[in-house]
Amino acid sequence: MATGDHDGATPRPPGPFRAGFWRSPIRGPWLTAVFGLVLLVGITVLFVTGLLSYAAYNPRLGAVNDQTPGKGWLGFYLFTWPTHPSWLYRLNQGVHVTLGVVLVPVLLAKLWSAIPKLFEWPPTRSPAHAVERLSLLLLVGGAGFEFATGILNIQLHYVFPGSFYTLHFYGAWVFIAAFAVHVGLRIGRLRRALRSRRPESVLRTDTARTRPEPADPDGLVAASPAAPTMSRRGALALTGAGSLVLLAVTAGQSIGGPWRRTALLAPHDRDPGTGPNGFQVNKSAAAVGITAADIGPAWRLTLHGPAEVSTFTREQLAAMPQHAAALPIACVEGWSTDDQHWSGLRLADLAALAGAPDAGSVLVESVERGGPFGTVLLAGNQIRDPRSLLALHVNGADLSPDHGYPARIIVPANPGVNNTKWVARLTFRT
Ligand SMILES: Nc1nc2c(c(=O)[nH]1)N[C@H]1C(S)=C(S)[C@@H](COP(=O)(O)O)O[C@H]1N2
Ligand SMILES: [Mo]
Image 1 (spheres, rainbow, N blue to C red):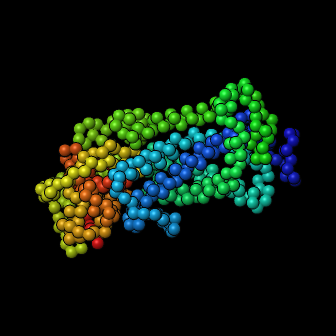
Image 2: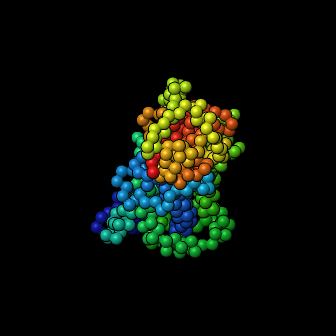
Image 3: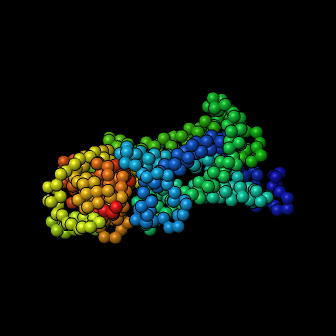
């Protein structure tokens, strides 16, 4: 039996718990620290963009927009989501989703580099050690959960029973708490490890001349290292190449223009067709059960104000003063469109028409029956922005049925999901 296989009274179980099991000669504090540093920066950006994404849903408008149960003070937001610049949500969500995908190889590499820690024996040595190990469990589990739910969501489109939002929200708080504890406990070791060798000398060292690091108190360095099959620079290059490939096949869905065709990993059709309505569709009219009768000549817009209710045909709406705005659609899933040229009625004009010129919110309801997307609340600042429209036309043509004919909401910097299609009723409140 190798030395170190007996710790106190409890003998080590066989396999990965044995000191001699992990044999890679490049595993050690330095490599772990390099991956750790990338994740420290990357996950911080993911957390901030995630919080901003949450704020963009206007959670203060209550259960219509934010159905997270029992969120308490975790549901804080620091400001009213603005409408300027119009690409704000597009940028935020593009960064959040693209970075989440790109960090997957780094996350896996980091797990690989630190895996002996998960098989420490004995499982706990002291109460402090037990707390640290519990935080590791929440860290690894939380990371796996957040990355998995995020990636499933962007690939498969809400496979969870209407609660991706809730799962990802609570998962994020558990994960980030464990992450903060982990960073707090390890930041000193991370800095020491990074200073322990110069990057230039690592980058000059080939496989044949690769040597293990000196034994470390954490036991990352192999007790009986095998001959090297890969240099440290090779491991970094492999991880970096994995991230670059993912970047190349993902980023196009957010950058738009000709780059859209490069987004091989994007869940949506890379060629949304040509013509005025030739841009990405999230869910088609057919997919959500909108029939020709729903949006045919019998369609009416019902306008509710504090005092009155009125209804309009599409012809009547089209005969009223029209306004234009160039705005993107940006989905929580990270894909977005370039600016489209919308025209229709200003929400501010409709508010005035409904007798609520100083409306603090508007409840938007779709023809769509049921489903989580048919009802949304917009805030006062969104109503007042002159670019916020109930659009009838896009790029000079009638909206197509898939883009929300007869009328849809389009608001600058609004999450795509709040740009309701096939609008049937607007209720303005002061
Ligand atoms: N009524 C209704 N409106 C909706 C949706 C929907 O499923 N039903 N999908 C939303 C989502 S998630 C997005 S990203 C945008 C996409 O708009 P587009 O399909 O015109 O690109 O529409 C939003 N409006
Ligand atoms: Mo969306």
